[in-house]
Amino acid sequence: MRRRLAALPIAVLVALFGATACEGVQEDIRNRAQDEVDKGKEQVKQRAQEERKKVEDRANEERTKLEQRVDEEQKKVEDQVKK
Image 1: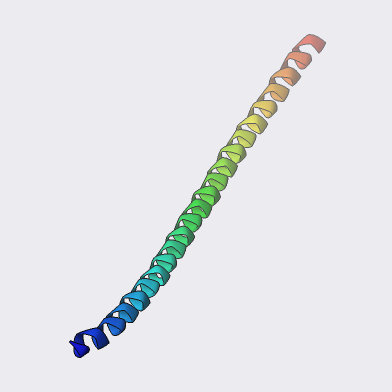
Image 2 (image 1 turned 30 degrees about the vertical axis):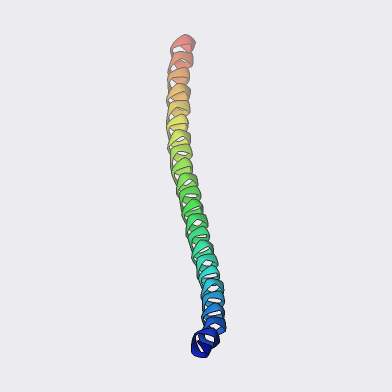
């Protein structure tokens, strides 16, 4: 009987330390998961900015081409009017 009673406090301490250790592990896992989520969000944000810049650059190129074409056509019309 004494051995059982002596083992009881030890079992309680082991259970408490185990629960504390599990909480620490859970917190660590939670932190790592949040870090991965944050890293993923940052990558998505960066990729979206890169793609947006590509689209803006292409739009600017096309606008420049169109402006040059309009200027050329306008010059042709002015030259024809002068004749």
